[in-house]
Every structure is written in C-alpha cells, then in structure tokens.
Length: 174
Image (cartoon, rainbow, N blue to C red):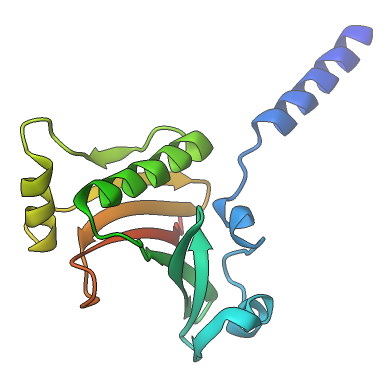
C-alpha cells in the first residue's frame, strides 16, 4: 500500500515537472480559439489596426520592437506573427538577433524538428545578399503541443528593411 502511494505521488510529481506548457501562455496567456474582441481587450493600448480577421499591435519579442499580428478564422485565434524591428540593418546585427531568438526558442522548446541553417561554406555578406534578394531564407521549425512555431530570417516585404526576422505561432490542428 505504501509502495503504491509512493508510486502515485512520484508519477504526479513527474507529470507536473514534465508537463508541456503551451507557447501561448508566454504570449499574454492566450489560447487558440479566442475571439478577436477578447484578444484586443488584452492589448488595447498597443492596437494599431483591428478588424474581424486580424489585429495588428506594436509589441516586443525578447526586447526587440515588433509588429505583432493576431489572425482569426471562424474558430477564433489561429495564428500570431512577430515581425521584429531591428534597430540596425547591419548584417552581423541581423544574424546575432536571429541566433538570440533561435537560442531562446531552443531553450524553451528543445531542438527544432527541422532546420535550414547557415552553412560554413558561404560568406555572411553573400548570405545576406541571397536572403535580401529572396534566393534563400533561414528557418527553424518546432511543434509544441497544439502549436507550430517557425522562426525565419527572410526577404522583407517592408520597404525600409531588406531582411526581416519573423516568428510565427500557428494552431497545429490534429
């Protein structure tokens, strides 16, 4: 009897320690399926655009300013993107921020399930040119519970920056 009670307590403790935390809890305690009104009420001071399909806010990710877009479908919140605003467009700064974010995500969620990383055979300036022209992008992918995460360093659609760092959270519907 004591042995069974001990095993039950041990399993409970292990379950608590190894329970998978949703990445959305780190983003303002959000959950997939929330309504646009509920999400906008949590960030109303930073909302710059709002409609039934998307909310755009000014926010931050690891102390870097970002445009944060919350995207909604019929079943509520389905995607969140962070477009980081990097103060310097210097090549080394962009790669340093990308690696900082990637390290943070690996520390939080483990090794990515897939990586498209920088090869040692290419010079950083050449890599930057290839990314800014759309010929290449760096990406890492994770699946954490019901959430897919993608980190990308890619060609920017915003005219003031040739390259952008994007972190995408999307609902991984089984």
